[in-house]
Image (cartoon, rainbow, N blue to C red; front, side, top):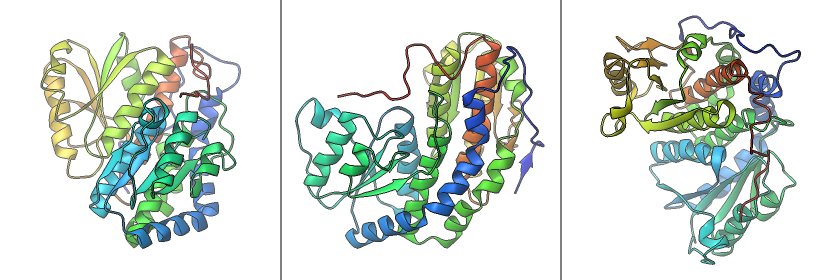
Length: 357
């Protein structure tokens, strides 16, 4: 394991609240939530993986929205890298709005939703199941409509999540989905790395990103990723929007130097998410290029030269590194929200459960 630089407790700055926010409490519960999933969810994961192996699908599908769709982006990369099988994101409106029943026979479909309550996700899952797909629900509510609709359910065992901004349910969705894929492949090294995650996440949750928080003073920023880490970049950008009211945009490090780079000016904040994978060097080079243009550029890699290194935890496998990265990130966005006088538990205009049709 590499800790670089040393991870310490996040510095609490800005608005002082009499009690820790719900979001903070739930962030700190991430290692325990993952441990509960690993302790209580093995039978369901192995059963679902066995069913998927029996089908031997040519293609995987995913159905999700918002944070859960970011989890599916991560699982898409994991699926294609591990199993060499494509995973396609299916728009729920194909069925709920346009009334089309997809021909999904022989596929495996992952439906991801922390609440399992949105009618469009349920309807799309029901439709692909009826067409012959194996449907697997990943949800924190094992008695939800989504769980009842899918043929098999992987409960997250995350415990109650009260803050509107999802944190521990996002992380456990990543773990449950990756574990499912690893069991399909029967990849012993990856399964061992997944089971070792709670120890790494205990360290990750204490990483101090306050220097990056101090650099975020304006109304917008970029987050960057590549490969599986692009999902983490997407999730980070969403969290900046919903908890800090910052217009954050997520880009692939392969794309940002094309059009988006034009808006970079002196001090423009950039956060790059890099795992110890084949994309690490190229992301570090882009983070450096942006720093050379004047950006306040940070990245979770020691390979940067002019950008600044964010404290990060390397896990026992490069595919689990992104899980540690998002765990470290959540602390800074909660701190930044409070520093801006915003209660991250109750973002304006948002509800914990959004039901779309």
